[in-house]
Image 1 (cartoon, helix red, strand yellow):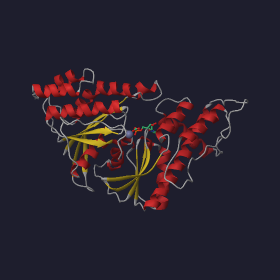
Image 2 (cartoon, rainbow, N blue to C red):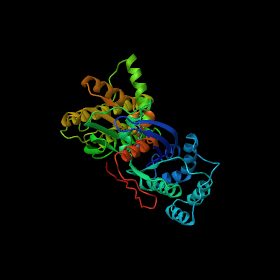
Image 3 (tube, protein in one colour):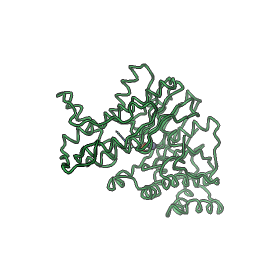
Image 4 (cartoon, protein in one colour):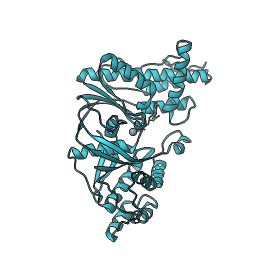
Length: 404
Ligand code: KG4
Ligand code: ZN
């Protein structure tokens, strides 16, 4: 089955062509085309993602990325054409009426190429930024009508869970259930009990900031660019290498919020505030005093705070994940979401899983952050599990808070 994957939930526009076959646990797959446009440069100047700017950038690039992915897959059929009837054209214009000039460009471009050899369109319908999600969903509906191809709506967080199956050799791994999945991204921090590939139960979550959000906010406090995760990670790695040659204690000590609480929840906003207070020279356990003396943000201070922050996050994530494993007698651990490409988190989880003799599945770092391939795979897995597809005439409404 060939699936066209579409991802526009946040600040990456992703289009892919995935060829997948077989049943779980023996799915084989090949990524035939994968076009990804990151809007980081657009959002970096504002220090975060503005939903309406994200929407505009998705709208501007989505058609070109589709051409790129289909061209890579040898399926952008310029020698052929697609007849779009007046009824279809009207339906497409109506669906795309909120997406600037996309409707006219869409009809002009798509009518000039032949129908690709695609069996289904998988599109993220949530969770995410609603204005951004609408672009992908409406574009999928328009393609579905033009080419008569069914749509399978994909849950973005399912995509992050399934991303661990995207191995370099194209054969999915056999996962032992029940599994505990730790989802760590810019918008989510959740522990999910995965009983099988269709049954997900949330057993823990952050009560305030998501881990990725905390990375981004701490980076901003330290004067580092957006997105902050990779920047903090770079500085923390340098500090750790220095410490190998010259072992020293951290200059600053940060809390490990909720590490000993009995539940499976997290809280990262206090950790971010602890970094802020440290930088501003405020005492963390009382109100600010007059002798407030902000510390100078030297390279040494930044490296030290970055590695201490990363250690605090890693320790909390490990402690809570293994608490969930014990509580639910999990047979394996899955980690997904943009933060799962963090080297320190990966290395410490690998060590902890080895010590406790439990299989750990991590996504290939390239598949950790948002991409269309995981969305297409989620679509395939849902289709073979008989989840119904839709056609483009059905109103598919994105849901910013869509649960697993
Ligand atoms: O999953 P994702 O690409 O988008 C969402 O669905 O949110 O995750 C993006 C988040 C950002 O907060 C970013 O700072 C974080 O993942 N991130 C990292 C690293 N790379 C990306 N956090 C820590 N270390 C990294 N290496
Ligand atoms: Zn994501």
